[in-house]
Amino acid sequence: MPESTPSAAVPRPSSSGAPSLDAGLEVAEVLDALAASLVAARAIVEVASLPRLDVEAAAFRTVVRELLRQALACRGGMPPRLRVTAEPCGADVCVAVTDNGLAPDARPGRGRAPDGVRAAVARMGGHVWTEPAPDGGTAVLFTVRAAA
Image 1 (spheres, helix red, strand yellow):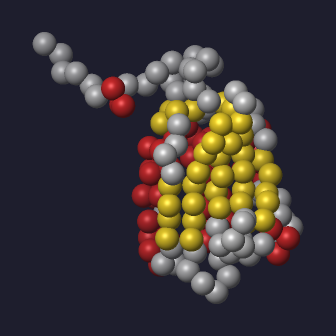
Image 2 (tube, rainbow, N blue to C red):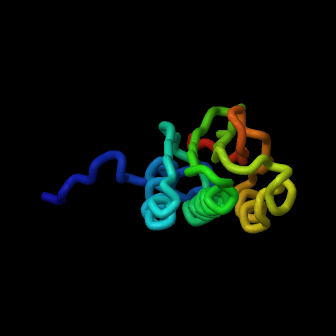
């Protein structure tokens, strides 16, 4: 008898034909890869419950990794407080990476997301923008397709 696979590990087909991904697991992988940098910066990281998405895993990880790296680089003088959240935006999901560092207009690129982030979000069919975070710092938001 074949072993059963837990349902969370079973990829579900997406509307694009590729397996949908668990955004929470993907963010956890990125955090593991950045662990040394996060510890060195004494970062506090909060990750909300994240949905399944209909996007390429590598592109999603690239976006999250680069936004977290940017947040660490633009942290100012205090330990960084980083948040990854998501909420529905019509048929899409709006993912936000928020930090307590420099305001958008004080960052390299004057509030624009890094080129690699903009390219990866465009490949996923989404949009990316920055806003001042409610408690100071920057929120970088991007839209992606929700899994069906």
